[in-house]
Image (tube, rainbow, N blue to C red; front, side, top):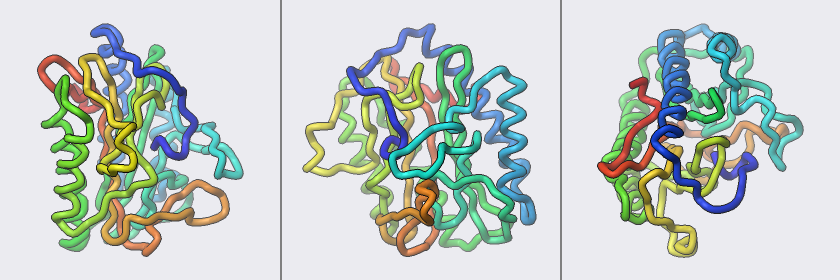
Length: 269
């Protein structure tokens, strides 16, 4: 999430096929962690328990958890965990804790690792037992927004064309796209150029960019059930919540731009 974490500034770095393959290796580990989280999520489990298992999987693989230790100008302390676990109205940056998940909750799990010098970053939103039809629709529409991006990414297309399609899909369903947090370039570092929004704003048109072969992007629609406005949940400066406290969903993949379109690096292949 580009708005909170520090990131390297400078030109967009295009990756070689060899570097993209190293990113895929990191992405496979992230995928394995998220698959395990899907298996574990159930009523009564705590988000701390989810994080403990993820920490061990990352350690055993010889990788580094990207989020742990990250600092923010808004926070009182560095982020303490391998996972961001954001429940219900928490949009992003939820800290794992002894909170027990309950039936009807959703938990967005975001995982990033560095392995062999390159990064992978992915997120998914998981229902906890049965959820309402409206909340399920929120999850479905958010995931579809990511799928739309994947289907439209190709060299020599402006990112704003992709973002406009994502935004139209979300808003036509009656939901809202979060503005304060967006996707990002990724590679040797978790956050690289460019900034990758999930919406189009004419005031930000100068930040638009042309997709090129070799770009690697973390595309991550964050969608709220109600208002797009967010705020900090408490004075720690970490969990970000929907201002109206309605549900939020978050899906993310690390994606390489190839001559043939998008290649997802965090889908386990």
